[in-house]
Image 1 (tube, rainbow, N blue to C red):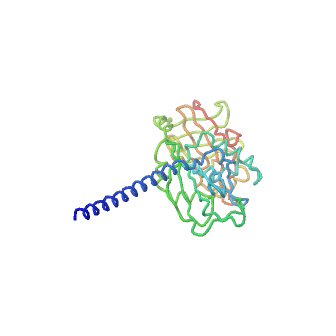
Image 2 (image 1 turned 90 degrees about the vertical axis):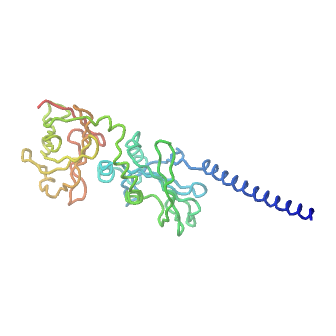
Image 3 (image 1 turned 180 degrees about the horizontal axis):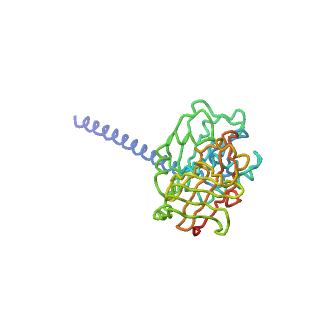
Amino acid sequence: MVTRLNSIVTIISFLCLLVSCKNDAQEKNIKTKIINNEITQIDFFNKKYLKGYSMSVDESTPAEHPFFSYLDCEKEGYFSVHFIPKNKALISFWRDQYFNENKYEYDDWKTENKIVSKLLNGKYDLYNIFCFQITKKYLDTSSGCTEESINIKKESIADLYLYNFKTKKWDFLKSLKVSISPPFADNNFFLKNFPEIISKSENQPSAITKKTDSITIPKSSIWSTDCTADRFISIKTDINNIQFTVPGRFSMNAQLKKIGNNKYEFYFTDFTPIIPLPDEMQNWENLDNKKAVGYLDIINESKINLTWFGFYSKETKKNIQTENPFNKEHNVPASLIKCSE
């Protein structure tokens, strides 16, 4: 009897030991997977992935924001990194102004990368930066492994990440079933899938804007690049209305709309008869007054930066008069100083 009891105890002890060893092995395996995930997590900003920024998906599809893409069918798969602007002025620039102000051949990748690199340099914080990745197991390489020939399999899954500026790492957001491969030309995919991120970034002031919260502008003031020149803007009624006087081009009344701390878009309301309008603006009812002509960035009480888009023609569906009235350089805001009235 004692012998049988000892045998039963021995068997039970052995079974407990097996269960314990199995649990330890499972826990060790889980830890190993976690460690491996941390080691193999891709840094999409690694220089080896950036062959050049783009503003076109293909010859007939311009993009609404800058992006770059990378393809390796054996390792990282296919991914694209998208720079989605945080404010409306930047959205409008990339979507409505970029191609009007920058002329080059579709396949001139060198020129395109040079221009976009200059515009993005040091300004990543003005964008929500998403990565859209399809891992190698979902790639259909039957027609080859180039961005022109690659396809994705049915029921493919894409992993989406957001760059975290605090940790300098990529935060995983979610996985989605997809039927098309990257990159995406417009902003809608990201605005639709991540409205909470877009809304939060638009409503959260940056460190720069906090410094300028207290800036005030007189109810009536004159601004120009040169106070002795005859071209100027006149701000009236406590920064609600503005008038442009540009000899040889137009005299315009505009309404200001606040888009951030000390940042204002302006929309034309009418043109005064002080200066004859150019031929292409004679029928100014054809100009869309729902699209911003440009925006003002108030630096301090005596300095304003003016970014100019031009007027959107409903007939030609593009902007006209795109040259900044105060600065002929493209993509460079005009710096205006306050003049005595």
